[in-house]
Structures are given as C-alpha cells and as structure tokens.
Image (cartoon, rainbow over all chains, first blue to last red; front, side, top):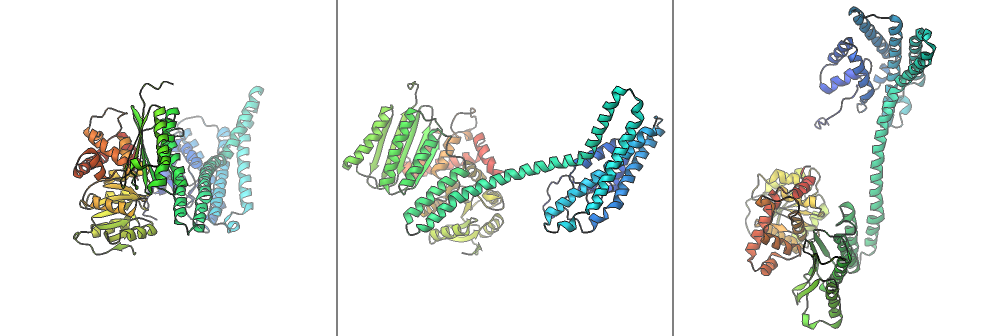
Length: 408
Length: 223
C-alpha cells in the first residue's frame, strides 16, 4: 500500500483535531508537526483575523479524511468533552483577538463583539456536528450492517445541534438588540440580513457537503451508464453469438462466419468506425461486412483518404460490391479491398489470392457480372480492369477520375 | 505450455528462437501449436514484468508481442528491452488494428505489426522476415502509412517526413495485399530492393515528426 505514493489532496484529520481538524490534516499532508500550523493560525488571527478566516474556509472546503479507519472509541472520545474544548478555544481565540485590537488602541465595544463570539462558538458546535454525521455516514457505508453501533447516539447529536442553534440565535439577537433604536426603516433590513447570515452560517457545512456529494453522485451515474452500455452490448450481442456458436459447433463454416460477424460488430463499437457515415469508407465497410456474412469469406478493407458518397461514388461502391461478391464466391481465399482517394481520382482495388481463371474461358454468367462492373464504371466516366490467371488470383481495379468535369 | 523461460543461449541452427508474450493463455497455446516445428519457442509470458525477465534471460531472435497487456502494454516491454537488446526483434501481434495501437508499438521499436487474424503461414513468414531484420507491413499498416504521409497539412521540410515516390508505390501495392515478391514483379525491382524500401518507410514511421504520427503514437505511447 505504502509503495503507491499518489498525489493526495489535503484532508481534515479525524483523529488529531482541536476544532475542525484542519491543522491536524495539514500536518499529516506536509509532515510538519500540527502545533506549527496551530501557532500559525493563532498568530495570523491576531493580525486582523486572517488566520480565523483561512481556518474557517479550510474547515468548510477541505474534505474529511474518510479513508482512514477510525479505531473504535476514537469517535466517542471526540464527543462532548472535545466540543467544550472547541467552543472554549474559539472563545479564547476571539478574546485574544479583541485584546490584541484593544492593545493596538482600536475602540472595542463588548456589546458588539461579545455576541459575535457567541455566534462563533455556536457555529463551531454545529459544524463539528456536521463533521461527525458525515464521518458516521462514511463509516456506515464502509461497514454495512454494524450501522447502529457506529452511529453516534441520536440524543447526544440533537443536544449538540440545539445548543449550537441556540448559541447562534442568541448571538444574533444580541447583535441586533442594541440596534433596535436605529431608524425604523433600517431595522427590518438589518434583522433580515442578520437572520440570513445566521442561516448561511449554520447551513454552510451542509451546503458544502451537499455540493461534494452531488459531484460524487454525478460521477457515479456516468460510470453506471457506461457499465450499463457495456453490459447491454455484451449481453445482446456477444452472449447471443456465443450461444449460437455452441449450437452450431458441428458446422465449422457457420461458426467462423458467426465469429467473424461478431468480431466486426464489436470492433466497430469499441474503436472508431471505419469512416464517417455517408463516406466512401463507411459504404465499403458495409459492403465488406455483408459480403462476409453472406459468403463465408475473409475480406480485409484498407482505405486511404476519404470522400463523401455522391451518385458517381455510389456507382463505384456498387461495382465494388460485384467484385467483392465474386471474390467471396469463387476465389476460395482471403481478399483485400483497398480504396484510395486523392485529388485526381478515387481508386478501388479488389484482390484475392484465390484460384483465378482463364479470362478467355469465362462462362456467360460471369462474363455478364464483369460487364456489369465495367458498364457501371463507364456510365460514370470511370474505368474497370480485371486481371487474372489460373492460380494467380484475381484483381479488379476500379478508377473514377475526380477532375473538374463533374459539375452536376 | 507452462510460462517461463527455458535455458537461453546463443542463437544457433536454422529455426528462429521465439518468445511469445500475450496475456491470453489460450491464444498462446494456439500460436505455440501452430508454430510448433517451425520455430524454437524458448519462452512465454503473460504480463509485462514477466515478459521483460524472460526476454532478458533468453535473448530470443524474435519476440511476438501483444499490444494490450496488463502492467503497461507492449510499449512498456519495448521501452525496457529495445535499448539493451539490439539483436532481438519485436513483432507486434494484436486483435486491434486501431491506428494509435499500431503506430504506438512501431514507434516503440517493433519491426512490424500483424493482426491476430493472420494465417499460420503468414505469421511464420512474418517471423522469418523480422528475424532477418526486415520490416513487416500488413496491408492495413501500409494504409496507415499512406494516410499519415499523404501531402495535405504543412509543407514538409525534413526528408523523414515524406515518402519518396517509389516508397509510396511500394506501400500502395502492400496495401492492396501484394507480397514483397509480387510487388517486386509489378515494379520490376528485386525483392531485396522492395525490402529496402519497406525498411526505409519503417524508419520514417519510427522517427518522423509528422503530427499525425505523433498524435497516434501519443494515444498509446505515453501510458
């Protein structure tokens, strides 16, 4: 495990925490003792409260260290006793800030800052509660079945939430209270803003964890979708074909045909298809696939360059189909279809290494097929040549010039 | 057939010494059966780490290399073995003929690429050819080359970045399914000359900076 040194993000510590586990988490991440960070936070807090703000932000946005297995009892020990430490810590820190400001000669009104401290203490209590719920949830997810033992007691958590809420509200009222003698127009606005601020303060941890959870959910959904697509593919196509192959095990030709068709389908699904739809490459791929399926044959397709199918290229594809079918029917050997598109011309070459034949001894039917290839190509201004000899295989070369003469 | 290396030694005798690397035991068994008697199978491996050990121990003439392997793929084996074993040739063998797979292993140092659909005779021919230090191009690899080196794009300055007219012609015939011998007859060349052209194309394929090649190679090369 420890060999896999991966880049981890900073996590808030579960085991080493005074308030939110931020300093503990930073210490684990940077391998620097936690007290260094604690001192830094306190120190910078005294400088205009920077440390306090930084700490609060990290508390909200750094995720809890959920990977670490929490030893039994540690969760408990971080219960009420520690809450008190946290609350007292915030109060002490706040007091320190105030004294510091006072020492600098700034006017400090305890009627304003006292309530703020109370709000802070309440918020700490609530945020910690949110942490513990999150941790318990993670733990439950990890070990389903021991849920009830792993969760904190409900009564304890209710008390904590209530105390936290109470402190926050008390503080807010105390802030607003002395302002009531302000101009009546401003009063409602101030009250509303204060309540809103309170709600945001209370809800912040939940909002943050909700956003994080939402992201995780979306990721899981995408993965599930991919898995489903893969499963459907495997089930509908691959398993069906395997079943068919088992049934036809006594017919090698049919088995080969089925396997070949499945391979082609799977390949075009896994990798990019041979060409964009409507292109020469795609059209030839269809020709090859159907011919392979109809006649138990192996045909390789190689395309270089690409052209979109128009009337003339459609004729070329039709002529190619004739040639490919001929090769599949008569050659008794693998065939290669090679198509090349450049500025001047489109060329398709169908070649097999089969038996070939004596061109003069061709029967009427095959002569007719060849005529249909040649005639098709001539009709669109192209040419077709057939080269064959017994034992030499057969090669059909179809050329379609692509000059500026085809306006229509 | 158990995995692992048999005793290594200097290559002697007529049969090429071959190591077979593929993660599918069934496929290895099939190939071993097909090649039995025609090559000396000195070792097998099913993953990258074991393959590197076996190849180093046996120093074979030819390694039949699957492109997709657990532990880094065929490319990882090439990166580890090609620099230290100049006399061992690698022939990539894969079900996939996607451009990024092909170009990735060829640029990693493979002397050729054949798909697993080839017949036993074709495979044997490819092994002998690679053992002699020649290049093996399947029709589809020739097609890739023509596609990748087709004019278009930027003006090419480097000799490595374009094919000579003769090389292009040779590639065209190979893409049509011609053997080297047939290409030689068509172009009125000696077989030796055709082999020289193909090797030159392989070199360009491995060293050229054309962005099509870089793009394809990157998809697999940086694993």
